[in-house]
Image 1 (cartoon, rainbow, N blue to C red):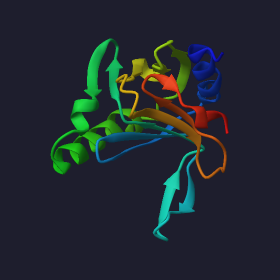
Image 2: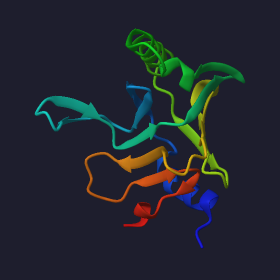
Image 3: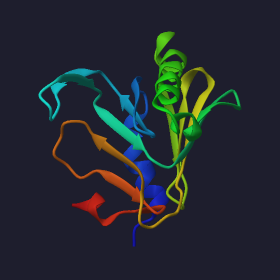
Length: 161
């Protein structure tokens, strides 16, 4: 039997010491890149930059600075203009004055994870617990390998393919 907390911490441990290199969104999904950026061609044939690792969050999340909420998943919901403005604000906060670095990773048995970042930031990912929906996924960008997928607060079977 897989220990959810241990498996998440083991997989996310590769982020320790890496800089957060990108903050974006796709609809209301938060997308984060970690490690040096490199140029790739997307499925439409356009160039884009990706980090070594990616975290895509579709469930509840909260970014705090020194214990105060800076942003939540609600900031990406609603009008496109609101989501774009929130993403730009997150980019300024986390990337503009020297990229935040991952200092520690913790997880819980409910499929949640917390990334403690430099400069007093902390990102907490909180699965919604809906068994039919993906909460979040973590993967190596541009590498054909299994993604760590959390669905309904548990590690999805495809995470071990």
